[in-house]
Amino acid sequence: MGRLFESRCALVGMVHFLPLPGSPGFQGSMAEIEDRAFADARALKEGGAEAILFENMGDLPYLRGRVEPETVAAMAAIARPVVREAGLPAGIQVLAGANREALGVAVAAGLSFMRAEAFAYGHVADEGWLDASAGPLLRARAGLRAEVRVWADIRKKHAAHAVTADLSLAEIAKGTVFCGADALIVTGLATGCPAELDDVRAAREAVPNTPILVGSGVDPDQCAALAPLCDGLIVGTWIKHDGDWRNPVDPARVARLREALRRCT
Image 1 (cartoon, rainbow, N blue to C red):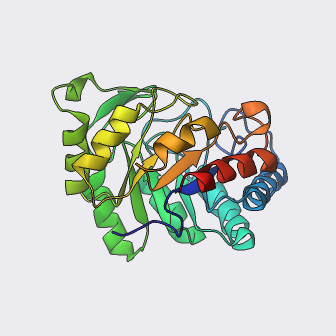
Image 2: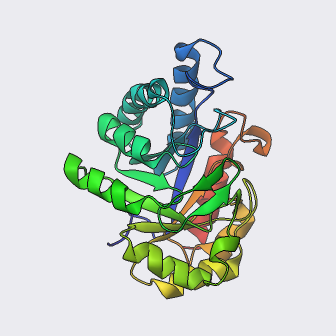
C-alpha cells in the first residue's frame, strides 16, 4: 500500500461527535450534533487538514466491542452529508472496539477508511477484555465489497497489554500487518499523551512498506521529530479551543499544526 495522502505526512483531524442516541449523555437533539459536526469539519478544512476521522468520543461510558443500532444509524446519517460538504477523505472509529459497526458506517456514509482497536491481539481496555477482530472484520469487508482501508492500533492507549508483554512492539506491528491491516497507528498511554518516538521508530522499521500514523498527543513542537517517521498524524485534542477535546475545533490551531508540518516535510 502506497502513500495515504498527497503530503508526505498528512494531518488527519478528529470530528468528535457530541453524545449520540443510545448513550447516557444524549440530549435529544440530532440537529445540535449535526451542527457541531459540520462546524468542526469546516474548521478542519479551513485550517488545512487533509482528512477527517469521525469518532463517538462523547458516548461515555463506552460499550465493549459493540454499540446499539441507533448509534450506528446516527453516525452514518451525520457523517455522510458532512464529508460530502467537506470534500476531504474521511474515516470512522466507533468506540469501544465496535469495528464491525464502524465498517457498516463507513460503507453507508461513503468513507474511505476506519480505525480499529483490537484488530490483532486481544487486550484489556477501560471497558474490559477486547478480542482480536481481524478475521471476522475482513471477511465482512470482502462480503460487502467495501473499499475501506483498516487503520489498526497497536498497543492502543487506554489499555493494558500485559498479555502480549512477551512480544516487542515491532513483533506486534509485523503480526498486525500479517493479519491484514492497511496502516498502523501508534499512540501514547492516553488521550493527549504523546507517543514514544522509540515506539514510532520501531513500527516504521518493522514494517517499512506499511503506512504508520501517530494517534495521540500531537502538537506543533513534535512535528519535526514525527514527520520523518510517519505518514500521518491523527489529532483530536490540541486542535480544539484551549486544547480540550470537548471543545469545538479551532481553525487557527489547525493552521498552526499544518504549518509546522509543512516546514519539516
